[in-house]
Length: 69
Image (cartoon, rainbow, N blue to C red; front, side):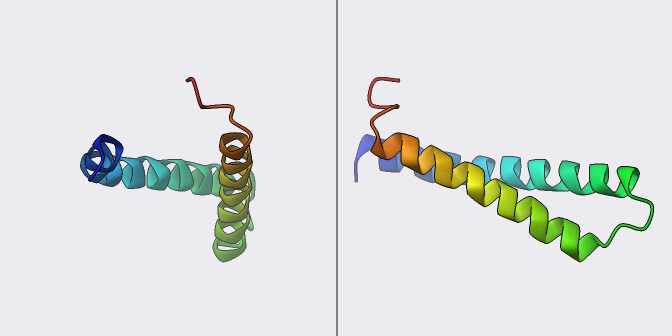
């Protein structure tokens, strides 16, 4: 197991928790801003935006942006 994989094993739970915090924070904002909010639709839209952001980061990784971070 590489040093990066060992670090990931230690950090995985924290990363997952941080992602959930971002998701739940945005769910609250949708509820505050939209009186008749459809929570399921909001959740789907938030997750789609998060996936887009992750896809963008993946593309940046492939392009070498983080090779010397």
